[in-house]
Length: 345
Length: 283
Ligand SMILES: Cc1cc2nc3c(=O)[nH]c(=O)nc-3n(C[C@H](O)[C@H](O)[C@H](O)COP(=O)(O)OP(=O)(O)OC[C@H]3O[C@@H](n4cnc5c(N)ncnc54)[C@H](O)[C@@H]3O)c2cc1C
Ligand code: SF4
Ligand code: SF4
Ligand code: FES
Image (cartoon, rainbow over all chains, first blue to last red; front, side, top):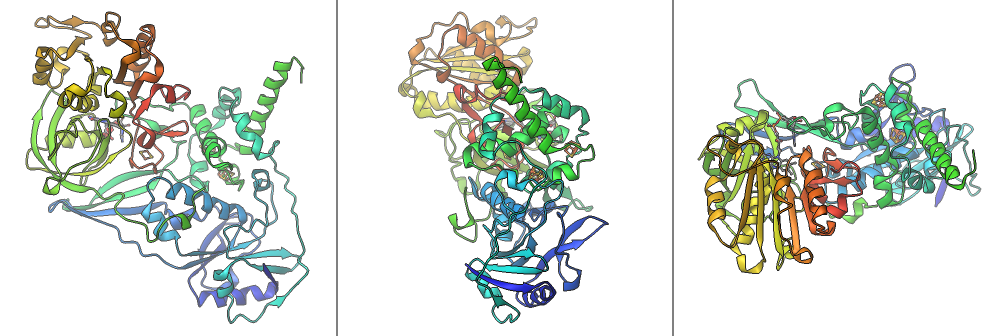
């Protein structure tokens, strides 16, 4: 693995260099403490030290709303929305968000490959960057280090005011052709970051915990505070559920079929004709969301489907913390285990 | 985990594109249910197995999962039976011979007919649950010699809701079909059984090791039918159920149909009872 020194003040030059190759998307400041991946027009507007963007990269590959079909009602003919693969560079991506893309890839490829996602995703280039964990990040607990480079083409690891730039594959090294401001380094500094927010168990043990806590009181307690807004679903980089709807033009002659992000936390999500709702209680919906992140897919794929970005907690209007939920479940599990052995915790 | 390099690019399109099809025959069966015979362009085969479903589209209105109610043994066209419950299904009610609907699919896992072959088959259908089962019934009737006894239990709320009346009469008349029908509430003209569908089960004489059951009905029905079958000592592995969930895509992407960790549209809608018994959300 090749590694170069890049001075912080040379980063805008790198961005300008990349912009000549393909459109570059990078974090921009939105509100006081809110960030968003946006197309770069001026390199100086890019924020490299950010905690998390509100929406993850999924918005580029699975847009919040998109047209699937266009049709003529009169002629009863229907065509698919055209989607052209597009080379785009995503710059300044944190490792958990890269890992989330890899998980989404799995969900979208498995079974029936999802063409719209794949077409938008296939030519993407990812340039990672390290970050300082805040009170909400816990990606380390789900097996993702700050410096995890899987999936990236280039990765920038910040040390003081310099970056170590790692070239991870041919695409990455091609990007740097003609860029002069790099100094080769031999002595790569390893750099471990500390996370304040943690899960109590190694992630390998968590599916075992979930085997025993389906009926835990924790769900009920969370449900008492949850307002069922679905923000946690929308913000989660590995949530991808959607709803489908038809919109008819005013002249009633033509229309389109669209899909739009949906969330399992919303009341009608699992409702069917006849009024039956298979998850009509908040506690059932919260449990489903959390089991999707730590148990159902994890049992099959071996890794947590939560990447520890902290978004669902940071943006929850009710202040519900996912790490608290999981840690309380672990506590519950331990109490059950102690009870079995007769030892009082 | 699957990666992008596991598939050939560009990905094949058409996942959400319906094929526009003609309704070649339509008939109102009851106040709520309407029956349709549908042809794919060029009389192409749908290629389904009994128990699978299609996504039915009306352009400008929407799309819904609907069971194929005809058997693949009868080719050239396929049949649907749709109950009016909401927006799309109300518009469908107004469509007739010559009208166009969109079809995607068939999707999901149906009944594994190979496992039924050579066995006595017990069919238990409640209400509109008879619709997907009819595909299996026709399959068996068309290859009658390949199967053992065919026992059909069918129940509705009242006589007015019975579907496929002419066929019911034919099943009653045939001596190679044991057909029992019941209604929750009879009326003046009704001379048959009155009572919920489970009341038909105790009197059955079953060759237990050689019987396979297929059960479909409204959500409330399953628990009671499965209990009744249990008291008959029919092993759980020999029971199949078809489950309904909200479905938006039919192809394992939209997430609506999840039953704990399973996808009703992919792993089902037909499940072996023992496969879903451990799932808390299934029944
Ligand atoms: C595998 C499967 C097979 C089915 N087979 C048949 C069949 O053969 N005949 C038949 O009449 N019906 C069948 N259904 C049910 C049918 O899909 C719904 O009745 C239909 O989607 C309702 O659409 P709507 O627009 O008329 O109702 P809406 O106006 O959307 O809503 C009416 C009610 O239907 C519920 N609903 C909405 N969308 C769905 C959905 N996608 N799936 C289930 N419920 C929904 C709503 O929550 C609401 O309570 C089947 C369902 C499944 C899952
Ligand atoms: S964001 Fe918070 S309040 Fe909203 S649905 Fe999720 S857990 Fe409930
Ligand atoms: S569950 Fe919460 S912390 Fe985990 S990936 Fe989703 S939004 Fe991030
Ligand atoms: S119907 Fe969309 S995932 Fe099953």
